[in-house]
Image (cartoon, rainbow, N blue to C red; front, side, top):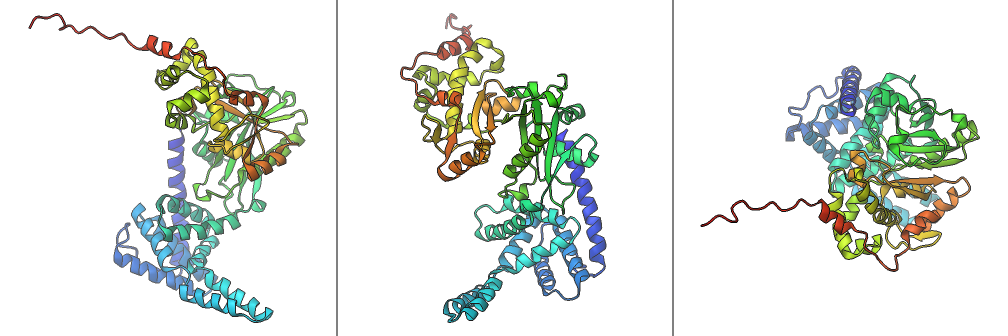
Length: 497
């Protein structure tokens, strides 16, 4: 469902954008000759460099400036991946700050003898330090959907830049511009409902990255009376959510996402709920990577829900642990045995048992794996250097953990078999985590995590981190042996030669 919606939305958006920009650019006759190839041949690059310089000269009025930007944007949108890489390379390489002008301005600033001279030299230094490409990029903001165009351009740039210092410098410029334009003060919090425009609902399906929307009935269930979806929007991208959070009202903290999203479950009256569960938070724009909205979004939603439903006293997540099994595979057997409280032979059997198809449906095997995997997952979430106590001086491995801990949450509970979907099994052996937001602790937890990487833990999670004084057999090696097929006899073993 996601792939189909994504392709259709992208095709419609690109067709519409090209048509609007074609009408704008045709008025000025700028860059009338199209590149000879979508890959941008050397001659095309020379032509394009001249067009960029002409655009920076800013001859004519606002209409001409917009027409030039629209023409350059049209060229970029029609290029291949290689062509876009060359376009961005040209912009980065040939339109940076002038080193000689910057050096002269810096020398004049250092030699300034008075306050007035220093102020004038500082202004000149700022002008010299601003790369011409920044002015060129800014021109796109005057176009319809121009801000979205720059966000998507940075998505391309992030995929291409690698360790190239020139492209990384361009990315720094573009990220700085976007961070200014997407300051949280400019953003609008809106609730998405079943009555929202169909195009917005399509985007919700396309962008959802945590728990795939399987059908229209699944989407409708997520927007029912005992659910909420909130998103941040930018005024220059009114139909594009920047980040959205999905919330479910429950009684008690939820521990299983399949149960939480069960379409056949009765709808709960929100006024009877005592808990709000944040079960999915999705950033939608890769081009805004490194520009944080999530912490502001959660705090805003907590405030709004608390005001609307005074009976809700608990705000918690039901979160995935996306990197747990990848981390576990990298541990040596000694570290696995120590953290899980296992003897060596059981630690060696852990990985083969996790490879058994549908092991979660075998009650004996699932129960045997429960404690060692929960202990290992607690160690993974707390990070290296974890010690017992009210706070763990550590640095969480997991990106989801870092996000919530950095926002001031505490690790409340680990949930065994909390997500038995193929994705949940593949990433975290079906374990999910509740991160709890306590209004009186959020700021303190945030400050301590930021300053010292102190991870706030509930007593239940602290217990999982305590070392086992005497490791005892858990029977994993025996269970593995029972599940290995008996060797088949060789039918030729008794034949005469």
